[in-house]
Amino acid sequence: MDFSQLLSDPIGFIAGLLTGLLTGIGIPEPAARVVLMVIGVIVVASFCLVFPLFLIWFERRIVARMQDRMGPNRVGPQGLLQTIADALKLLTKEDITPIGADKIAYNIAPVLAVVAVISIWAVIPFAHNIVGTDVNVGALYIVSVGSLGTLAIMLGGWASNNKYALLGAFRTVAQLVSYEVPMILSLLVPVILARSMGMNDIVRAQEVWFPGGVVHRLRAHRRAHLLRQLGGRGRPHAVRPA
Amino acid sequence: MLNDWAFIGLFLIMAAIFPGAPIVLNSLIFGPKKSNPVKNSAYECGIETVGDTWVQFKVQYYIFALVFVVFDVETVFLFPFAVAFGQVGLFAVVEVVFFILILAAALVYAWRKGALQWV
Image (cartoon, rainbow over all chains, first blue to last red):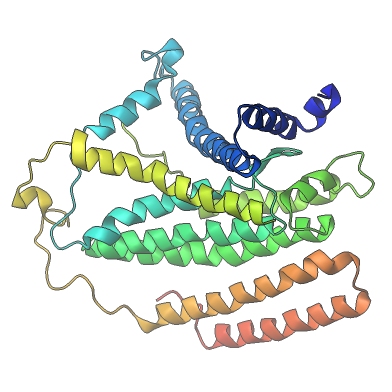
């Protein structure tokens, strides 16, 4: 029990506490580690799904203010639960697979698109030492898993038995693919400066008091990356019922 | 190290369950099932689909994709260099510059052949 560890490495501290608790009630050590891992996976994965619920609410409120409207303000305090209500409504809608569509691919494509986005969060550091897992090829993992989304678009367009969807998928894939190489090349810059692909190392290299701090050197790169994001991914929530 | 990849494996499973569960719940339990041929027809602005949808696309598109694959693999080769950048000397940097120059020549060649032209 070391209070300073709680400040410097809170996840490790809590993990140590829980391991002690689990082994204390007679669970063998390896099983306790597996339980901890499952808890960690569930916490990180559900965080990156629950957080957008409120970001969507936030964006809708701000866009509404810009357009001189009120925005969602009825469901829950200040309309905070609006997105949850929308999701529940969508659950009660009929799921249609068009005639002639490839049923399996048509239904897998949206799942794959979300998998590509969620699984990136396994290595994204929220702060130093607060990270799902710190693999030593984190940057490469982000690049490789992130490009699965392109596959999902192609799969969906191809499987839906619709010429417009197919052409749209071809165009979107061509666009995403042409942004991919610049994105990977721009990811090389922090890897060179941090001399590591591990996400924790990259975070540590950005601490301002760190001797080889890279923050000021990264500004130009970050602008380029931001431009790429604006161009590459459209706004998925741009079209939605008011 | 092995623990890390076990975490990622579990994470991938969880990442598939989270978006998959609503789709399964919807189509099996919550969603209404009142299908009819008109509702299930492929939507192409109200006009009947003419011919087969799964047609052969222009071959230039696949050349575009091939060029992409070449340069995507190239960037993967650059990552180990980026990690070792601190230890390797000027020699390795010059070598990587040559590597990129060769690939740039290939890019120029593909460009002049019209492989980057949108079909």
